[in-house]
Length: 252
Length: 312
Ligand SMILES: [Fe+2]
Ligand SMILES: [Fe+2]
Ligand SMILES: [Fe+2]
Image (tube, rainbow over all chains, first blue to last red; front, side, top):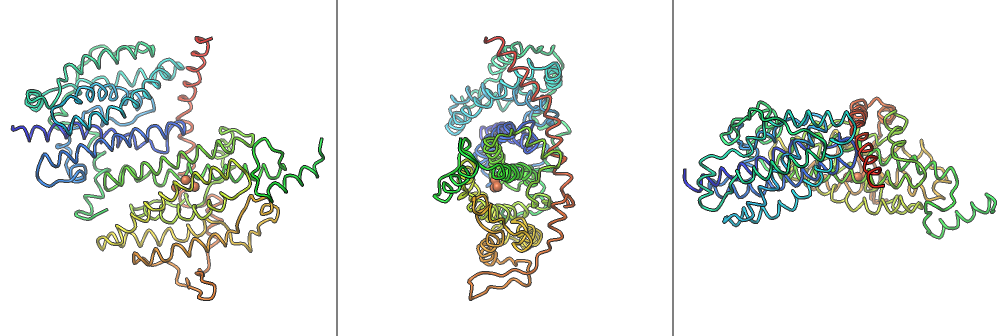
């Protein structure tokens, strides 16, 4: 694998995770528990779709085959998507959505913090911009984790269950392969082992504050780096891509 | 203490001078009631209106369209929030207003009881529905109640962005492939009459009470607003080569206005009564969101109460 190919893959991982998470969040639009949350979740979704758009645009250039960000988002099949497994998990109840988002926000927070120092100027600039957004997302979901964890017995039970169910998808966040190895050597990508350490501390600390239990070590799912997803992604893509696939080669 | 008659005279003279009525000012009970009804209906319309468009966020055909639609629907939520707060200045709270919506006691705009069947419907809604809403809301911005009129000024700015993005979608479709053009025409066919009707019954069947006009609660008659909307929209349809589905539509050279054909008011009143294609699913979506959100709101309260104890 050469550097360009690796960089293309790397961009897809970043972009797809934001895109799929944004897609999931936008399913809430109009159905949130309070109006304020409809607005907040939509805000986060907008930021994530924005991140994905910028990175996919760059990915298209890196790939060098003339693909636009829309080509990459709407015309790749399931097995070519590189989003983390966590992002594609269905919304569930509000506790599930918040827990999923929180785990992802902490991840993105340390990820972008580190990627800001990338030698790739585009990635570094995008990280700097995205970090500002993610800092706000993390503040929002952290507050909700506290409220739900330390709210009523029902909310506590719901959010604990969500964390437990999501836990097996958190290992996948930090898996590294030859793409990472190659780009890390070039100073382009980051060491996910470092991110993992920070992520674990941060999550453990917040769960404790929220009176929640850190799940016991479970068997971790893996596969997103190689485009091996859970069954949920196919349905999500079928919905997201349907217009582009039904009416190819037109402008919208 | 002034008597009712003096108070009413002072109230009217303020309105005549163009001074806004503010929440703490004296106002006739009928004025307050009417405003609560209108403003909460408006707020409910913003919120229910999120649903037909929200349908298409996950299916938007490009990343740009997805982002614009997300932003638009988010604006509508903001409008709802802003209008609920403005209504609260009249001494009723949001939870009570929502209760009225959920029990079917309060109404919302008839237009949102129609389904969004294709992507072109998103264009048609922005173009026609937000377009009609702007006509209505620019009139309401001149109304006498301060909080409502200020809300309208603020909201209208965003509505014109909504209107533009909708028309832009229609343009891309109308100038696109044959299938896209058909999709656009079909959406116009289905949304035209509901948009015409959403501006309310015609003046002969719903005479505006002189009082509401005098109090500047109602600023213009439904038919006058409808005429302005049609005058503005017909040339836009012509420009992109779409046909307004009204064979009787005629430009009257003498008046300089378009004259539309007969409106199917029976359909309108049926939709208002709850018999539109989507009344049930729209209301159910709101009731479900409320019901599914109850434990979340309870958790928020419980957590805040715990924090208060800790902090005191
Ligand atoms: Fe409106
Ligand atoms: Fe609005
Ligand atoms: Fe609007």
